[in-house]
Image 1: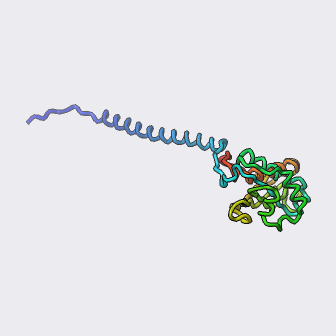
Image 2 (image 1 turned 90 degrees about the vertical axis):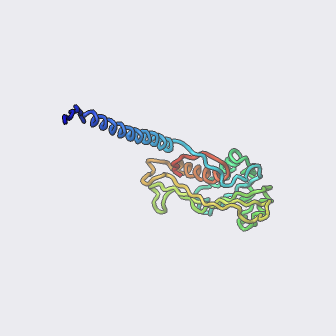
Image 3 (image 1 turned 120 degrees about the vertical axis):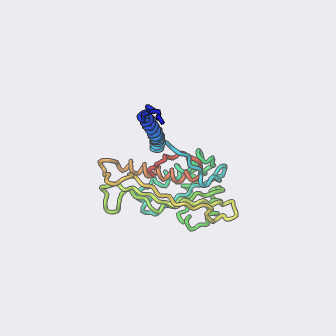
Length: 228
């Protein structure tokens, strides 16, 4: 029996398979490149963009609020204007950001000055004397511009307990919110007086403290990777 010989070549099949594999590989690689590209864009946005942070205690809106700042005598002696700056700064933020009705800082500061033993008074009594429905109490237990004994390098630190007392509520002498805040400046060590002046460090630390104390009460924008 005579067999017919077919002129069959495997080369086209091998070539087509190779092209198919290459196409699949490039498609997969392209997907990785695209994912990496958009991932890089998202990360770049996070480094420079901002995110919305909701208020932790939004109930300040429409209320008559007195901002009361406490600090020990050492802090007050070293920074005589600090309590006034914090009182004014936080009050202004509550008015503009939280739609609250702050008692004028001058009224609050005058009352505290004329009643040096006010920390021993019930919160409800202080609120009544100031005509406030709510007290925002900032207990500043740490505030420094450098490490003790090292006045050459800046190491600004500020820590406080922020408490809310609803004097018109069921518990007029208890905190309905108590939150710890802590900020620093500069963000890294090694900076001295040739890098920043004392006024710059004091101003930056005070602003950050005002931010953290007031941001608890209204929705706001923060950097994705905030320094504080």
